[in-house]
Image (cartoon, rainbow, N blue to C red; front, side, top):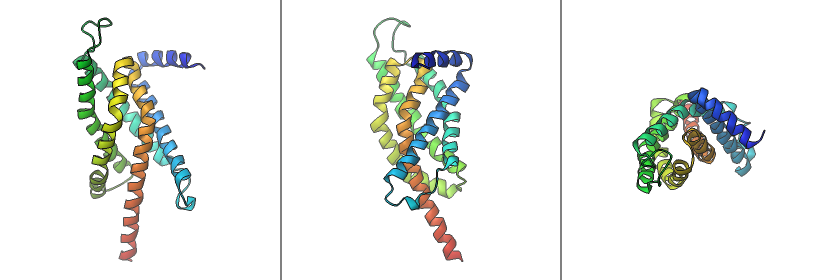
Amino acid sequence: MSSLAIARVYQRTFEARPNITLAVTGGILNAVGDAAAQFTQKTLSEDGRELRGYDFRRTLRFFIYGFALSPLVGRWNVLLERRFPLRKFEGSGRVSLRALSKRVACDQLVWAPVGLGAFIGSMGIMEGRNASQITERFRDLYIPALITNWQVWPLAQLINFRFMPLPYRVPFSSFCGIFWTLYLSLLNSREDAKQDQVLALQHTLEK
């Protein structure tokens, strides 16, 4: 199937069921990002014995996160579209760079911190971590990941908001997000290993 045919199928599905279309698309692309992260971990590991087999549950968690969050991102994009219209008259006129800048700034200063917090919290809950472990994860991961986000995403969102039609903005950001998910997955996995080592040491000392 050609890319044009896929785009037509997506457009028809989006028009009929926008929320489920965004949810499935976001979930699949998030799962792809985690799969890439797991294979990257195996490739870069100096000692493959320290890594277990493919973690399907981990990929499922990323799918669930993308499935749940993508419709909310779609609503957020609609809000930005209405609050910061790029053209004075719909479909005509010059693009306002000021409005475009405001849209990107609002996305990065409001949604990015919320989305990152939702990721860290939801992953901790789905992994069965307790409140203190999730709090520790926030302390270790949140600020470094947010700073990295601000180094990467403004340009991607500038392109997204400027050139992508509204129905394609979530898939575009999800596609770019494959690489971001790879980064988050590796970051989250390192924190998992750290917390698991602490738990194992505690159990050993308690015996």
